[in-house]
Length: 109
Length: 277
Image (cartoon, rainbow over all chains, first blue to last red; front, side, top):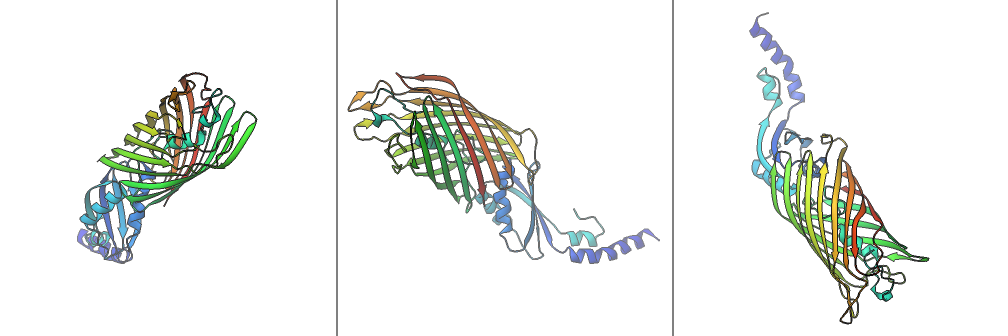
């Protein structure tokens, strides 16, 4: 099997998985996250948003990772305010879409 | 014991409970056990703390069980109430009942955040209402007392440090001017293992707490057996799991310079169970 056929086959096999995992991931850099107990407010506020399914906090790298259903839009302005209300400082955000990464034949980040 | 004056009128004696409640300030898990810290609560958050503390000085012993409720008004401003129940022993006499209800607020006016680091400063105010049961030995201070405080804190993944100063304005009780108090605190903290967000987290603390009390005045005359200063070294711990916390510490006196005939503090202890939602 040629390399091109292999990539096409991998993409076709990944499509059903991508469909099941359809959604969007937001990865935010947040400053001030020194302790787990204090960071709970971030989780609580994010989970109050309709469509947010999972929130992970990486204290050492200052990352808040949010997995949400497709169609859920988190803007930088809204996240800046949310983090301020939680007692922290929002720095930046990037969006990752596992389904788009799968179609391109690349591993989802 | 703030003023356990054997040779002074019984009216001068003030319950430890009121003293300790004002001394410890609003309880927040990642703040010192006995000192004041700059921590507040996230906007819309609700925190409940059940705290038990005990103090001994000579023949006197006080125990207090308090329920503290706090609400996050904004991400930098919180307010709450404390409802204490107190038991006092003085030699063979005992008394118990409702202590002085406390209202408090804290505003974090400065914050600087970095990767895994938060540095901040806050002002705090607390009023202790004259709601204690009274009686003999007295439960409650018998007056309305005020506290103003300023706190600084540095919190990182590994190390903590705090510094605070508080001024307690003791209300007069009839002709008695009870003497104000200044409290100063220096605290260091250490997290031996960097835990993940959903893992149990442990921080060890060591505090230096100082209390400097002005002499009392009765009818314009200075009360000899009043005022002075006490200094404590206070080891403590806080242990948290997600949104629940246990906090504990003991104050060990290292220097006591009280005027006249006053029993110095033997020790004090504080245990807190806390959660926020």
